[in-house]
Every structure is written in C-alpha cells, then in structure tokens.
Image (cartoon, rainbow, N blue to C red; front, side, top):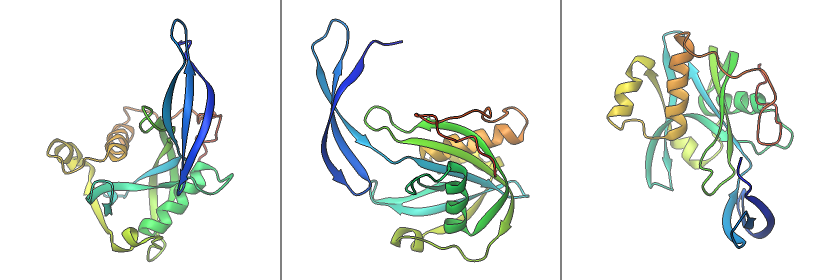
Length: 202
C-alpha cells in the first residue's frame, strides 16, 4: 500500500456537472506536489441482452471525439441518493424504452483514474420488456439509433474497431462470460469508492 496521500484539495472551478480541483499530494521522501483532478458524479452502465442473445446498443454522437460511437446504455448518477440499480433502470427506459426483469451487477470500476474520480457501476439487464418509445433527454440522444448486436459478433467488432468504447468493451465481454457460466458477477457486498450500494438487484 502506497504512503502517498492527498493532503489538501483546492477547488478550481465547475464545468457543468464536473468539478475541477488542484490536489496537493504528499509522500515519503518527496516534496509535496500537485495534480489536477476532474471530480465526477459517477455513472452507470447497462448491457441489455435480449432473449435472442443480442446486446441492445446505441449509436450516438460524442463531441469529445467529434464522431458517432457504438456503445451500451449509460448515464450519470446525477440524482442525489438514488441507488445505482435504480439509475440503471431509469437510463434503460429513457434511452432504449426497455425494462429489465432481472438486473445483475457485473462490475464496478474507475474509468480513468489518472485524472478523474469517475466511478461506474455496471449491470447486465435480462428478461427485457418493452415500455414503448424511449424518452431521450438531450439532442444527441434524440438523434441516436438503437442497434441490436449479437453477442457472438462482439469479438469481431472489437478486433475490427467497430466497438472502441471502453465501458462497452468491458460490459460486453463480462456479459459474454456471465451468460456462459464463466463469471459469477459481483459479490453481494457494499461497493463504491465510499461504500455505495452498487450490488443492489432489482
């Protein structure tokens, strides 16, 4: 275990739902140094798989890469106190108009801890039922398309760069392993960087 630690954090500014801080880090044998950190509210990811073994994915514009990305359902944890499983169900309904009869927690992970504390809860959604039309929340979502991708094609799509979104690659590969009986999913214990409830099942 490293003896480095953040001794002070200075708020630099806000950028929408993001906060920027300058953190002072101290450790053995070094002078204090600073790092800039992007503070994020956290996220959920939902890989929805239908009875035909197809992942329900969306293709939407992402301004950061100035292009369209094929990805699984995801969204921010921007409702105070909302359990991750509830956020996952809400995002599934909003983006693709589906409800899951079974929601399995597959993993939790930091997205890019080199510069942000964004923490993500990943769920597998099974026993899907249609809720009717989706309820997109922004201009990108209103323009996005919904695509059903056979899990059997995932390896090839990753290998040929048809899927290049990190959270989607993690989600799809773990979903394959879970459905094949090779991975049991998350242990049912409190998760999250501060003891959240990411292991909640619907």
